[in-house]
Length: 341
Image 1 (cartoon, rainbow, N blue to C red):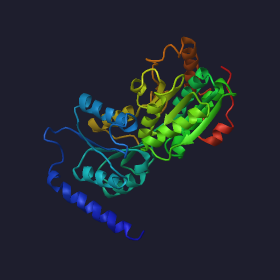
Image 2: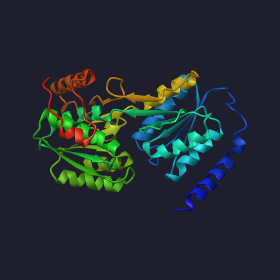
Image 3: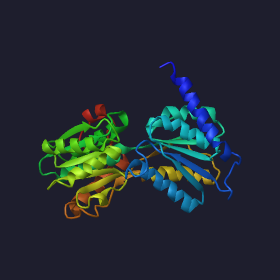
Image 4: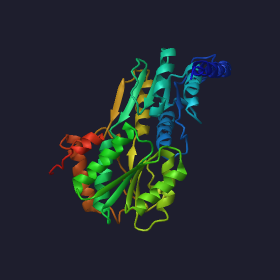
């Protein structure tokens, strides 16, 4: 599209013009460090990925006494505009929440070398960018093991947002965890094709239940809210939530949530920013670092028995020690072998 560069330039000029009035000072009136965040299109209220990131920002404001702001993106066209706004207002740290912003972070970071940026779930090779990634496959392995220990139909499922390498980490880890417990358990896999399509999330969850699954691990952003609506209508069926603790959205119907501590990643970078210290180039968080893990089964203790919890603890220890290496791709999953504990 030959007109795209000029269109993008025009939009950015408008964004810069809109912020001139707010760009007169390098810091807030209080003199505090200022941290800004740009959400993915799912926005705040997704009760998943973006909300987890925002929780880290709220914690930073409370504990580190920094000034914060959030700009929500209605579409991908807003990513670069929102980051440019924060860069022109001279924020000390600018978070981009989601891998979809990788190209935009690269471009804005190049134009604003004096600003510092952080991106969640992607690696951007720029000197003024911190890349925060997670070992989703490790927490997903535990989720798959629990599903295999709990299923009555010997069929479980995975529902992802978009079929990309990042989501395949969830898928591969989940299937491997199930295989570790019982290789005869069948794992169905579908993708919504979106992180926002709540209706399709509900519909596809219904399809997987109709195909015999009684536990579905949903990693689909806001589309996962549709899956939660679906499971509420089902007897003897559960979902496994993702990113944030979703257990309380449908008490007793969410077996557990594979919490991805985006809030921890945000807070750890904010801690360095507040102390005026260099930020890490690449921060990776897995089970060992407390970056991923399962919730505490507050509403499902009648199903998640002490015996199952003990097995999960052994698996967690084996992953942390390196005895079990959770696969992060379909190719690694194909060659995964059960480990005797």
